[in-house]
Image 1 (tube, rainbow, N blue to C red):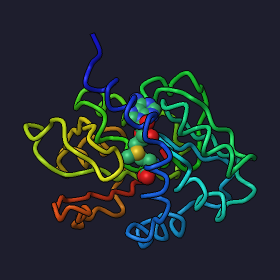
Image 2 (cartoon, rainbow, N blue to C red):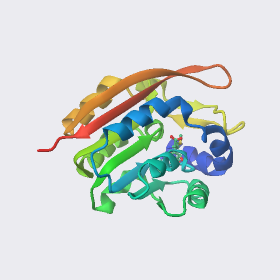
Image 3 (spheres, rainbow, N blue to C red):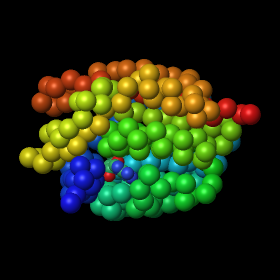
Image 4 (cartoon, protein in one colour):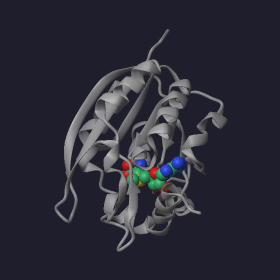
Length: 215
Ligand SMILES: C[S@@+](CC[C@H](N)C(=O)[O-])C[C@H]1O[C@@H](n2cnc3c(N)ncnc32)[C@H](O)[C@@H]1O
């Protein structure tokens, strides 16, 4: 039987073009993304992006760090196909973010933009520990997700998947901050902002930037 998670990834695969059209403009998060790149250690030679989708954020990172080696992963093959087309020099892979330990290396920056809404609390906890192990000392992680109590998890309509719903998980600011600190990551930026969907529904986005301790 398919789990909620598999259904969501199937939806991202099926509606990858629609998602790309709807979210290629990243203006709503520009201020946080600009802060992230401004806080980056020097030089940035390697970047890992988790749940890269059609490469909307990857393009921004590549524009800022054209010489960095970027590895960007997503489980939806169609997302990876679209991303590869626009950024041929990036190492895009169809890969599960729950398996990143297999990469066996460290990165100066880790980008995780809106992948956590599709991971359970348990998988999120493991991902943060795995990320901490794979960030170079002094390196940065960016996480954006939807804030809320885990009881709110469930299937919801989206602005890109027609009549098909996607399963969303919600995470709390305080819990994510605690997980990051426990994993050796100091929080440098942690803010909430409202997000208004095209149908008028408002949800709370959470944007976190953390730095891996040096010692
Ligand atoms: C909301 S999109 C985010 C795309 C882009 N990062 C952004 O911020 O616009 C979430 C992406 O995460 C991917 N995803 C969800 N769970 C995943 C997993 N376990 N491993 C890899 N990718 C995953 C989905 O396929 C989808 O492309």
